[in-house]
Length: 477
Ligand SMILES: Cc1cc2nc3c(=O)[nH]c(=O)nc-3n(C[C@H](O)[C@H](O)[C@H](O)COP(=O)(O)OP(=O)(O)OC[C@H]3O[C@@H](n4cnc5c(N)ncnc54)[C@H](O)[C@@H]3O)c2cc1C
Image (tube, rainbow, N blue to C red):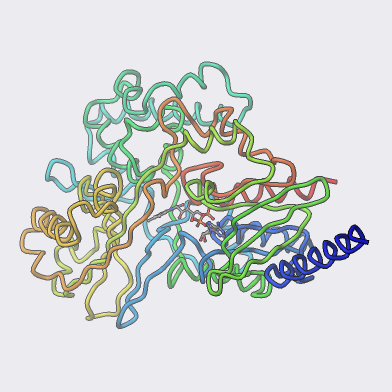
């Protein structure tokens, strides 16, 4: 009798617990799809785009209240706007084909080389081509040596497409890009400085901190006449929004912080926490593609846990630093960045001002300048170690040194910080081409890893990784 009572009580309690749990965790049919995608940055949006084109259902789970991730455009009074994140889509970026398909208006007004300041002198790009510009910077003999070196770089870059890499090529991950150029390039000291100044803003760290192997990959944006950088008319955020519109709002769940990804033989289960009301949700699918940045992967619990090689790949990857400052300036100050009435922007300053871009402003209204600050200055500004006032002072002083009297025209500064590992990069000894990086490009069970850092330093990697993951899923039985 007591035993029967206990069993009945036990069953009752179990039912009650299950009912309570069910009340807290929302299971619903609309929470399932063929593929779940974590993150609505370029990689997540591109993945959903390719899947929709292939006729597969996909749902994106995004922790923030907006799409785009590191693609963001800030708008100010009088319709002024400037990029907070991604500035330009390089010509080789597969995302450009999506833009063309969706008729996103693009513009390209400059080339891969930019005007730059070196030791206080301005080297002005007002030429028809990259190589004509370079000829104005260095001597005829230096230029000849540069051409020979650049041809070697092109040949080495081609070899990167053949896998597995040769041992001699792979060995280039053990030497820094800087040391390798110093020792092996045959370039003059001035040409070496030119290469450093033009490329460092791309990977966001000093060239001593990346390997020669990754340097070869980065250089291909600049080789020959270089690739053209593309920008969305009206701001890059329009690109993210247009892809999101194509995917459909019903397929993008905002404010869903993914906390747990479980992969079994039967499928995947992804748990989210609604950042608005802390309600937990569970989503189910055949596969999941995570596109969240490297530094956020540790916030997610994986079942089964990530394999040791993937863990090691994440732990030992480094990061380039970016910091953005939008500077609102009196229109009367425009002469500082104009030569013969033509803008010299973007200009590389090789200092605390980073790359100075011109945002969009209405005629005769205050002008918005966009500073894309990288490397040690970005680290310092991101850390706020000296406080905001000090950061502003450093920037104004740098402006006044470069353009005496300019500081008086500055009306407002707005700062945007990024995580210290915001940009993918690999320290000397690691590379995007090594075995550890390969481990992130293969699925673990039903979990696919995408996002810029799985392929590349930039948004090229975001789109390429989406293509890779979707292609693999479509081929899988
Ligand atoms: C200042 C700056 C300038 C740049 N300039 C250029 C440039 O000129 N050219 C270029 O090619 N690249 C540039 N980049 C790099 C480019 O922005 C990125 O490579 C690209 O946008 C990355 O896309 P992604 O989808 O891989 O990652 P992200 O854009 O970071 O998207 C990841 C998404 O995942 C979401 N997320 C994270 N964790 C979770 C979670 N637990 N649950 C749910 N969602 C989550 C995030 O909120 C985010 O929306 C720049 C970057 C910065 C910061």
